Length: 163
Image 1: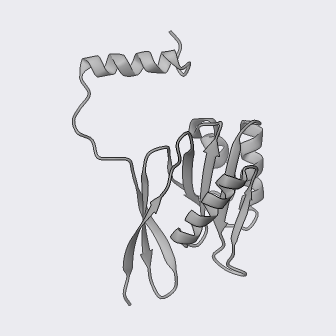
Image 2: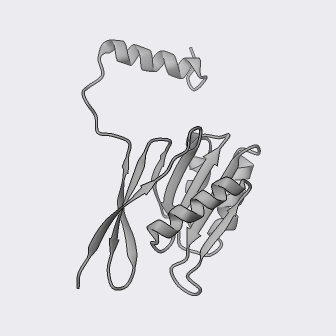
Image 3: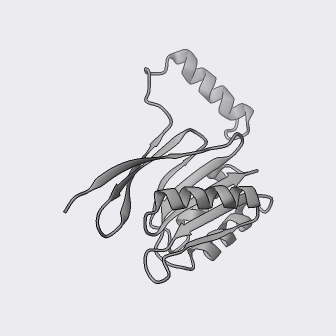
């Protein structure tokens, strides 16, 4: 048996975030849709989910045609069973991740980011699997006391921490 390794580059447009995960059932699309709109009613998103059995289709939901198209293209490139690709606009992953984690079908979240993303995919005779993701770039050092102060001030400035 042989394994082929492929790197799939995931485009992340400006002011858009992507969440890539794995689920296990056809009702994933509807349940993720509900989780998103009840978390952030003004969210714009596109979701594509790769079935692993039965019809083996890419199931698509969302309320933004551009993001639905992008999610579909990326899901087809990844082509791994039960993987979903979710693009978000007008919301941040931090706003929806807990709701996603509570969707009964969701088993793994590989990444949630606005950084450049690469998905490492393995292919065997049976199918494809996500081995992991490359999210952004590798670190170049350790934060200094000045950078600690800057980070803490930034979080307070955008309202994610109290004074």
